[in-house]
Figure 1 (cartoon, rainbow, N blue to C red):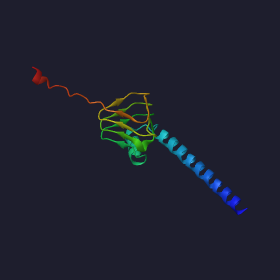
Figure 2 (figure 1 turned 90 degrees about the horizontal axis):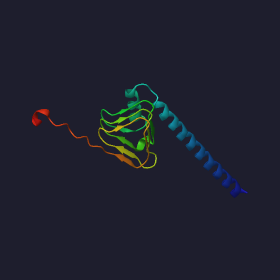
Figure 3 (figure 1 turned 180 degrees about the horizontal axis):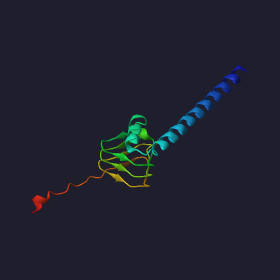
Length: 129
């Protein structure tokens, strides 16, 4: 009878851990979704970098309504723009976005995605003449 009690307690603890884990992840996803609705990109970037651990480079902007899933696996380099209502899902492997990349509105990107676009510098007009 003692082994049955121990087994039941173990099973109950397992279910309780799973429930609490799911509750935490649900709240986390809800809260990061709400951050995307804040009207100031300065405040959004501050919360993404300091609270949600997104690595965001200098001058990068995440616009209104963008949803960053798995933010701990997301790297956004400097000068990059993430458009309105874009969804970046980095939960299972990560996403790396290079320098000066523009991800348009409504774009959906998923795990194991690397976006690297090299912008060619404009030639000096005086050197062409």
